[in-house]
Image 1 (cartoon, each protein chain N blue to C red):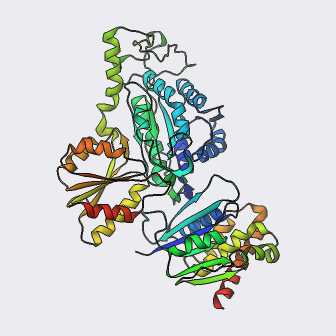
Image 2 (image 1 turned 180 degrees about the vertical axis):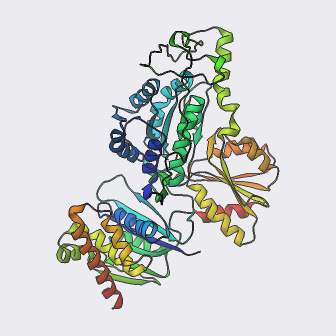
Image 3 (image 1 turned 60 degrees about the vertical axis):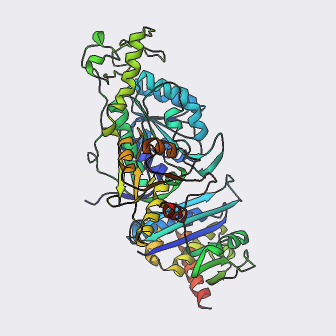
Amino acid sequence: MSRYELRFSGSGGQGLITAGIIMAKAASIYEGKQAVQSQSYGPEARGGSSKSEVIISDGPIDYPKVTECDALLAMTQEAANKYSHDLKEGGILLIDSDLVTNVPPGNFKTVSFPIINTAKNDVGREIVANIVALGAMVALTGQVSRENAEKAVLSSVPEAFIELNRKAFSIGYEKALAASAQ
Amino acid sequence: MSKKVAFLQGNEAAAHGALYAGCDFFAGYPITPSTEVSEVLSLELPKTGGKFLQMEDEIAAMAAILGGALAGGKVMTSTSGPGLSLKQELIGYGCIAEIPCVVYNVMRGGPSTGMPTGPSQSDVMCAKWGTHGDHPAICLVPASVQETYEEVIRAFNLAEKYRTPVMVMPDEIVAHMRERIVFPEPGEIEVIPRKTPTVPPEKYKPYDTSFGDVPPLAAFGSGYKFHVTGLNKMQDGFPTTKAEIVQAEEERQVRKVDANIDDIVTFEEYLLEDADVVVVAYGSTSRSARYAVNIAREQGIKAGMFRIKTFWPFPDKQIKALAGKVKGIVIPEMNLGMCSLELERCAQGKVPVLGIFRVDGEPINPDQILDKIKEVK
């Protein structure tokens, strides 16, 4: 059975748990697959390590946590160092090129672009960096269609911020494709 | 018409399950990792005419729901670890005064404040032995978001049917995990109403056993007056120390559950027909166990799983039967060996019980279980 494992990692406050939830919702509600999202985080509201895990499958999902990661997003150097060793051979590592300067070595494909700065400069608000990252993960993993992922994003954000998030998702998606082609 | 679906957390599903069961009063004191139950019910209960009350602490919240139930409400509180410890005296009060209520407790690391955001399964003994004295205990341990929703409804039903506190105890992983949930239509799942008196107020006794082991319960404010106490009581609710009454009442309270084990105990059997090794698991750990059992089967090992859905009363009969059939029992749990002791009691030395005990805040992974399955010879 196809089991695809994603991990969104970084520090508390970066919105990574939300990004994981939206990815799982896209797969489970809009794509017609099965998905489980889980998380672990410390007691801090901001800072401290944070990770969100998503398992996507065509059939029932037993173990809800990552066993061998297919795709990893790392938004801090610490997360990149800590979790890259769990990546499958041929897996995908997406990093923020400003925050992860020592690219961990391994038998996987690394894609990098300045995620937070893209949110700040190209989208206009740093707060949507998680949605930029989500757009990129959707593009790189191909587990859910762009349309279904966008639906999941737009149904998860307050109405006043729909356009901002649509733009963030779209720019993240395009930037990842461009960075991946390099 | 297609059913309503949503992508929800276990805790959110629990809140919606309570609403389906007709919960109209919730009192709580927020605590990680159960706070989402309060968050959802504080928004939703007022919409359906119910009441949400945030109390000054966990003890007061437990007292509030007991009072709410005596006033005719279908009630629930939610908490975690240290909050459960605080509630214990009043859970005992609920047992002896026979007050239907649901206590939803998310298991996190302990004892004391322990590890608030880390998963655990170390409250299962507390569900039975946390409050002192002999008393009935019912505790449900769901393993998915959908099941959390359904088990909260069942908890309300059991509380009404047996007029006693019922606990629902997901571990933190199940409580915080998100999955797709399909909401049942109204009427699709049975909701058991409270058995209320058929006699006029002047003839009513709150513990009148001529109506059976579970006497009807009147609501305060409906014209019925009665006495409620934590002391051993007579049929009219007033305290007594008469030996034969105390003995009979204590036995009846425990018998309400003990005589109905087959109605209460639920479980799932997975690939057990020809199994040499059985993994007994509950909560999120059962998901790791199923994964491990599937891999073991692929490798030609005859492994199966017995999943405990009702922890208390314990499925003694089923485990005793299994112990006579298999070569070994593997028990993975996020504590230092609690269910394990119950399994050893049921196995009566017939087969080895091999434990995997983890209290570091990390889930038990399938590889650990697979390794242990292979140790059974």
